[in-house]
Amino acid sequence: MHSKILKAMVVATLAAAPLAAQAGIFSDTAPGEQKGDWIVRAGLSQVNPKSENLQPVESATLGIPISTLVVDSDISPTFDVTYMFSNHFGVELLAAWPFTHGIDLKPYAGGEQRIGQTDHLPPTLSLVWRPFDDTKTFQPYVGVGVNYTMFFSEEVRGAGSGVDLTLDDSIGPAAVIGTDIALGEDKKWFLNAAVRWMDIDSDASVRVSDVGNFDLGTVEIDPFVYTVGIGRRFGAPAPAPVEAAPPPPPPPPPPAKCADSDGDGVCDTADKCPNTPAGAKVDKVGCPLEQTLKLLFDFDSAELRPESIEELERLVKFMGDVPFATALIEGHTDSKGTEEYNLKLSDRRAKSVFDYLTSRGVDPARLSSIGHGESKPIAPNEIDGKDNPEGRQLNRRVMLIRTDSGM
Image (cartoon, rainbow, N blue to C red):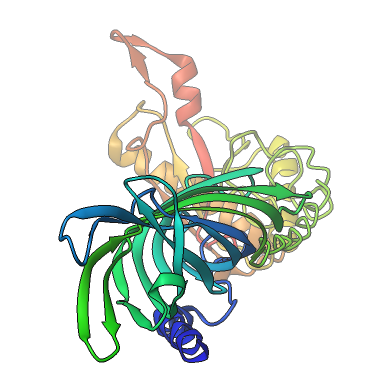
């Protein structure tokens, strides 16, 4: 008997070895999921063979059927281990303490006679499917696999004393249906109930002392196995969620907006030219890059009138406040008179402004002057052939054009 148990243990170990090598004993490859979990159960199982296991049994003297052979049921501890290689499929290995079955002769004439007994071990390897995840209380499963049954310690008694009985080992298909009923909130422990069917067919023979061996035929046991037990799931819980990194600190608030009375984008505290006209392009100190000067000249004259002094002094101050500024002074006229005359007149007027600024200390190297005459009007001198005084007045102008970048 001990050699048979050792043989069953070797078979079970060989069947489970590939799984253990691949996954690592009781390791969990997917924490928080069924995949990688190990399910271990232990309980009591009843092996219930079918009703008639060998028929007919013939009379040794008459050569006619006289009875059937019946194998009775037995209860023994069993345990099984399932490794879940995916979230819904696993491999289950069933093992047991040896079952002991009585062998009865059941004559057709009536009655029943115990003629012997045998022990057997039914290790079974199955592929099981579990449709639900491990959060459910009820965990049904089904499976199919292969059963290998080993018979040993065969005994004959009573009328058959002195006769040795041999039952060959059996291999055949098997099936299982069962359910686990979870206990507790963590659902690690559970109750189990299962029903199995095994195709167990063994060739039986007897050896009669001093006579010889006789084949009895194939004993078809094909039992249903009913199991109740308790089990536990081994698997790591879902890893704790990784706390998200704290959000980066908010960007510093933008600097407070400074006062900008003329809206030119330069703070009043740095603005060297307050009250710049709206829309004018300015430099870094808020001074226009181009401006029309408010200057007055007598008719047909390049001499500055006294009313122009205020505007000219503003320019002197501007050139002093903005020491990096350089400028071109442009003179323009309307279209009265010849082009040649107007060109010379505009040049003299631009030169008058140049002379005044340099006389007030502005470096001549920072200034230049030019006359354009009537060539660059900014308004029509006539409209529909009629004189346009307003347009002519706009065209008679002197402009200060910045020649530096303003930065």
